[in-house]
Image 1 (cartoon, helix red, strand yellow):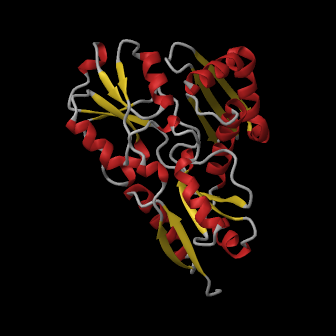
Image 2 (spheres, one colour):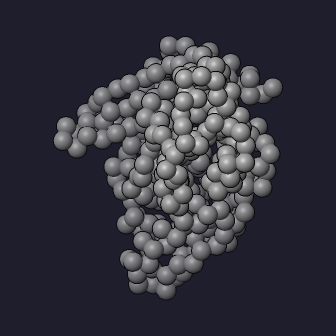
Length: 308
């Protein structure tokens, strides 16, 4: 084995470090030498503005992209749902790890009686906000930012009834409270629960190492979801959910995607069941179906609203 040390770039939040250490262990188990380099991102520093107001997608990945391009790190590990669908020139997707829990959960304070009445729910996600309002139009939704620990503490410190989290993040850190409810009706973010490792396109040694970590089923399903997102979005943040699941017994892929208005009043869904051989264009075709059924106008309205 060559002596090159693979430098793993990561944000310095607890969850990001957990993800980086997971990749580090898998590489070490294969005999590779590694070191972790923690970098603070602009997304972590600007906690007072909702993500979609910061003006760029990929705010959590940009700092690490620059560190890689500048040669400070060799790879970066991300929650795949935070990664823009178009990577910077010279950077490639090198591995998608086996997916964890895909679902969102509601963390509450011991009772969910408020679901039948009025309530205040916290989330920093437009997708979660829109789906919540679609189901509970009389509820108030407030913005919630910060890392997992910060968000849990903010829920504790405020009079809110609950907050929505990705189950995977809380489970990875053993922080999932007993007072939670699985939101199986909420369509997750594209690639939710999956971790992706990116590297420089010309770094053959590192790409070869990472190829051994790739989980093909997760790679295909997240590809479909992100293709759906990319086809709909055209570079803006919008309330979009998508989930693709592979059925090994039937050799089929079941896909469900959604686009909502920001207030949750409009909801456009595409659902498809196809043979595995049709996976490469599945996300594209599902997105086109939504765009042709009112999605083009809805995306125009969303972009206008987010400009204000």
